[in-house]
Image (cartoon, rainbow, N blue to C red):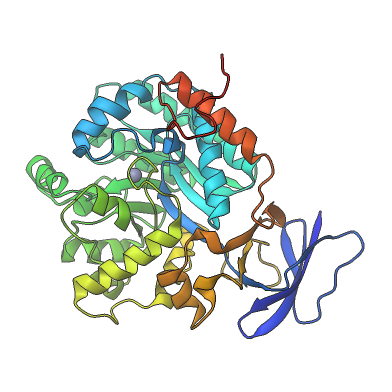
Length: 428
Ligand SMILES: [Zn+2]
């Protein structure tokens, strides 16, 4: 499989790119297609790396708009958990396909997922053509420790068959939903397999208070004590971390993924201390969190909110630049998240083409336009591993994904709004 792209703007140049077997083999001026290549005429388009969503629960697209504007615990207890107990693998598969559809359209090439039936999520990622690190949420404070450990082992076996675009990980849900002995067990298993661990950490003030009361230490110190703070750890949120925890996380080489939109929507009461995390030397990524609690998977929105919130918090409009925000949102400030270092020969052929004629991109520096003005609507083509997932705004099979996701949602009692084409569709 080979792909050739010609005429794209990259910096101040017009460039071409050829990819073979998913890897860039030629890049720069004067690149010409070969007869066997699939071709893209990129005249009038801007070539950039794809975005990377560092934390989500993709299949929760099915829950979008269901029980919004409730306090967190009521939303979980009355809305989400009762339906999650009925989830079948096919629900997760089509919910994840729906999420992938949205991410492809909005220029996300890779994401980190934590959700039930991870083998179904991994199949959806593979079929959609994206890249992801996929992990089952692990919870055992309900006393089901053996069942949880068995599920963790089984998920790693099943995910090992998921192809080269899917990495398997482990995802203890949080320090307050997993017992200390299981956190230690997960740390040992991850070390033995050399795989990543993603966990929600220090999202709310209550979590910090409870952790100090139960363990005599703040969340990051406790996580370190159980062996889970290391260069393979991805921490989602980190909102309530203090200075000593930031220094510890930097020393251990773990990554923090900030989710500013979800934090605001769930009213966690504080802003992730990014400027202090940066000063400590912590690697940082950007995430949407799940579509049930964001509710969008369009990282362009999260980039803007991230930058504005940090400027506001610092009372300094220069606290975070657009270029820096873009580096964070493409994963270049946190190598563990798995983004390619750049568009160059020998690297994966993962890239976006943006519409140069989009009004939002018509003046000024590109980074500023992308962070402060654009939405995912400026993305014209999304390419992963040399495979064209969206061309001229069209994604093959999109209607089928929408129809099947609706069928699954209907089965769970989650109806689309009346104006949706699928609200009146025939179904069994
Ligand atoms: Zn989350």
